[in-house]
Length: 173
Image (cartoon, rainbow, N blue to C red; front, side, top):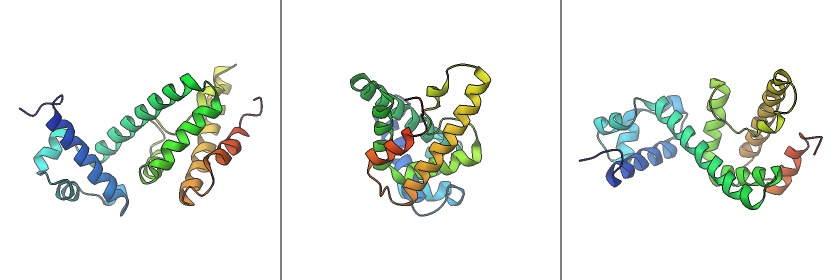
């Protein structure tokens, strides 16, 4: 039986996600259809619907999964480099390794205004809670713009150079 815990279910889920990412390299999320994903993944539509409700829900699930992976990656990196610079470097290496997906994540975040995104705004959680909300929002917008520009230019700057630029957003460092 094909249940959520077995390997066949996981392999199919991976095939759906890979097909979706390939299609995102060619067109926007709004243009991607379930039929296209199914053809590319070699599955039937009912199999897709066994995993996801629709394309937007697939995108949300992938963003959540990628966010959790990045957070886990940060945790491992930060255990050996417990500093903001190390966390930024780890995040940007992940972005550079998956540019198409993260470009779509940023585009999606601009439209959604909620959910996980490219955010290290917890560094701004000191002091007044209301002030912290403003600072986190400003940081998140600045990060999104900087990383988006970097992606738009093919990740042309070295990761360490971009880290130094981002760290200028932390004047108290």
